[in-house]
Image (tube, rainbow, N blue to C red; front, side):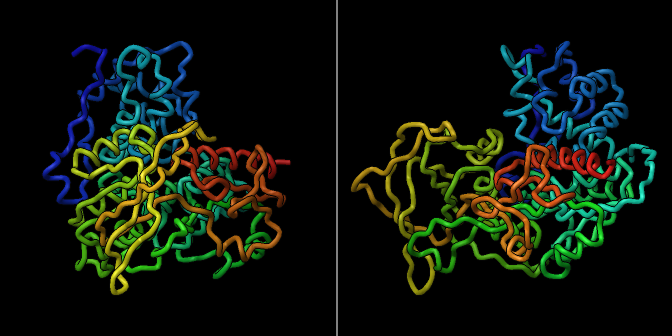
Length: 456
């Protein structure tokens, strides 16, 4: 095979994968991984690593794979990325490391993400773990939230030698990795296995504890020498149109939470039901919207993604969008909902208006503009709104003295320090739209900031 083309990844056939929540890609075999790794040009100045938010030495770990030195490859990744089996599966590599790959200027870029997940999976199967010598410090740090930002921050703080306690509001650690990303993209046994690394390092994880309710923020400030806030963005954004109060309407957060963390797709084995009608409309076209659409399809619905721009402007990962279209999800472009119509308290249809693309907005994408007198209706009995989220209101409303920006995002400076001395923040808590790997990068930087603060 020419090194111009990446080694293809085998996947579950469409007709089978739409029937269950099993992972779609099968992953590389050892021989396939070595072949793909050998495509790497081993650039003198690797642009891929510069575009990695957690600064993985990509060139080095790929070289080790090419040499069949799998253990060394895994240990190299683990120096920078605490959860490589997760990152390899869900990172938007096409916009980061793979997007900067020199080989990609003329041919297919190296399949960095699939190589990362391969080597992490190989390490799990072979029980390979890093051996760290931690020089213990007497200082204690609290990490609020066990999502990607909290995981990354907690691991680095522990490596510095601090006693670290992670506080999680839910009954399982992992944050969005547990409740937000479906099993067919990120198997939960992978998440659970990766989280064991935190316990191996001696990080304490306290579950079912809501900061601001079970424990106050002020109590944490008194009990710990420093804090990191990685509470995510748990409050959904709605359209603000008539009919959003009807039965059959979900925020994407609730729909994915029920489906993934509460395992509604295995009802009645698990006692969380979920009502999905015959026709489902998903408002939005980002990764969360695609995840919700693909879940609804597997729950037996005919699914329509309703998007106010065109498919080429969807912010979703290309691979996930491709999977959705292969599975038979309908993508309706240039429409925007203006009313949800009900009957006897349940959704019956959605009134839409046609859109056209105007001048670029702040995101660089064309601004959608309504077409006059173009309203029409589509029969729907379930609507899932996937327009983004804002930070957790309960936590912020009960925290005094913490400066926030519009919509409740926590203010931080360039080093991720809040206005409160010794308190950092990162991930969706400070912005609302961070990817998993971006949140991890912010967690790492916040950990470094706290280390510098505590070392003075």
